[in-house]
Image 1 (cartoon, helix red, strand yellow):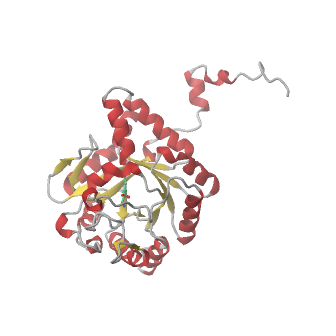
Image 2: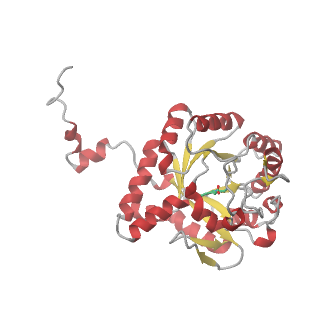
Image 3: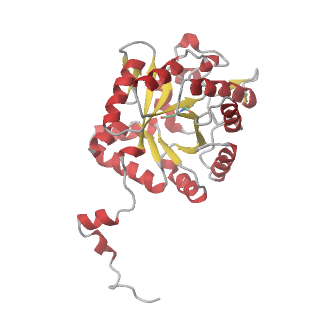
Length: 330
Ligand code: PBG
């Protein structure tokens, strides 16, 4: 082997800030971030979420106010998650496609009040079911795939009908992208985009989210292992992505974020499709806790993590840190 040193000194490109800035491969911009919102009933209402310090559940009017603030900071998209009152939860979660439900009203009101923002709506049944599962259950407690897909199609159509920009099925039923796409086309919603949670792992990092939408008690000791993916697997993620692209997904989501960047990188190498990453509630809670104790520098750690997600191949990142990051970037 020929000796390259000293002809090649890699530190040459690191030795001052203008040079480092010029050769940098990945940067984070305000266009890369999506803020999740937990929506509640009522007016001028805000509730703290214990396991997610700094994040609040907001009534629609307050969410609109906040979205306008975020928009001034440069945000392009928001992801909505409804907190459904107990009285509307049922075994089959049919409130999910109520045209006058909380989510539907939220989409319509935000669309009307805020121009030029991409609204992403979560499609899954867990906020609406008494058992907290994303699908409906058979009499012997199995998640029924095809019956659930029928409801997800109705839910998606009702969101499209309210003018949502992006429908985001996070349920992990088989065949739902095909069924949703077919019915969107049939109903002339040809521009409604589908962001498929293709590789959604059965993760232990979702705890604070389930607390935020109030499905944690409903779910009890049960889990989502029969539909969300086994975190030991990679090939399974590739098959999921392959399938969802062929069924008509426009964008692919990989979730959680940080422990799954190998999946992001692999999918980015293999497919010509935009990739979003969800930095989930547990990831947020971990950084919050460590930085509250001054074990880590919050701003630096968050910005590093988000850039690493870009480096792995993310086009955009759904993160509870979106607002903070936008402010830090200013
Ligand atoms: C449910 C859904 C979950 C999240 C987004 N949509 C939780 C789950 O699958 O139980 C998690 C997001 C987060 O943890 O921040 N359809």
